[in-house]
Length: 248
Image (cartoon, rainbow, N blue to C red; front, side, top):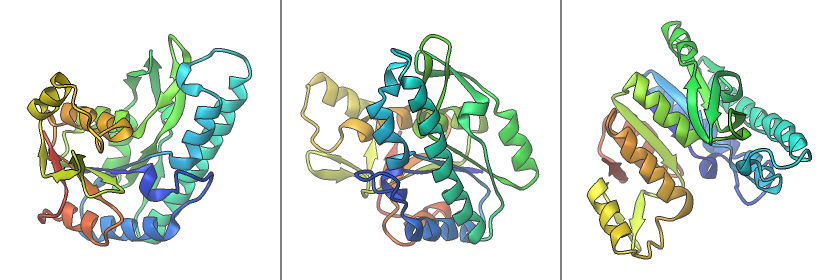
């Protein structure tokens, strides 16, 4: 079994609300289907989640009552995005089932404390493809929090130990000082942190993604590839060597 994370930057236009890149997602769905591999699909929230989540400051937990509307709206929007992704997978001939994290996960201080992974196992045993996504979930300390697709990847990798986990991004891999590197390990990241190097290309979401991918490397081979390049996801699933960054 393999894990595939379809990044929000690939499946949506992150600068504009509710812009779904249907043509891209249909192609990626076909590449997954044609690989013949059993997968769990995770996808980001992209512009369907991040813009309003930031507006309502949902990453801070419950601060004021006005945020409650934000929880409802963002949950609705990411479910709408999930439905679009699921439709593309069905169109490619797959049998996907949606598993919202808000229904199966509970957090404490922005970290997943427990998640019902038995649901994923049962669907896999029925030859169905579980599809989960970035969402807003309950938090024992903060009342609610953002559950990112990357955190879900880590929990799924920890339990299922897939033979490969693929982060599908909008860039070829991890860039350090303007140059793409084929492999990133803990030593490289620690050296960069120790030297307080300005990492122009590995900042924000990519930097956090690399740190999570490093944790995942204990359980699975983890790679970051460009989903905007036709055939790259399919080739990675088939075990072919492609342009990308191995993490671990």
